[in-house]
Amino acid sequence: MEFRRAHLLHSLPVVIHHALRDNRIIAFVDESQFAPELIVPMDEIGTATLKLLQPVEDARPMPALRVRIRRSGDLGRELVVAEYATEEITVAVEKTLITEELAAALGDSGTAVTRAFVRRTT
Image 1 (tube, rainbow, N blue to C red):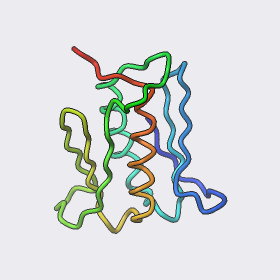
Image 2: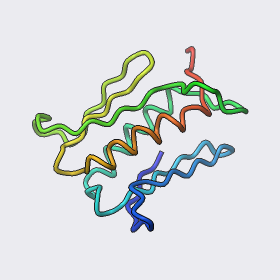
Image 3: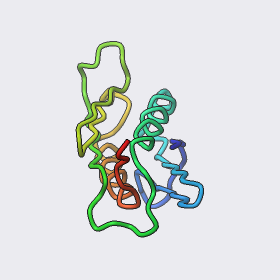
């Protein structure tokens, strides 16, 4: 899982590229809505999340995991904090580093991508 800042056309906040064969997901996020200091911690959370999932041949009607991105002002010294539940991950992001529009789009896109996965049983 990788996050890359880019200048996106047509006012899109995020474009997801999912290479199924390589099990590689790249989120191109609009540079005006995503601070550069978020790249490393968001990459780490994305990679840890993918380790919980196993790719499948055909997309499922239900996502394997619901992704929620929440803007927060009470994270202390942390920029990003992830909380895992059985069927959901909530990622709190320092609210000055990400826009509301991008947070919502990342949550929706992240959830949609997990349709190509199932939860690992081990």
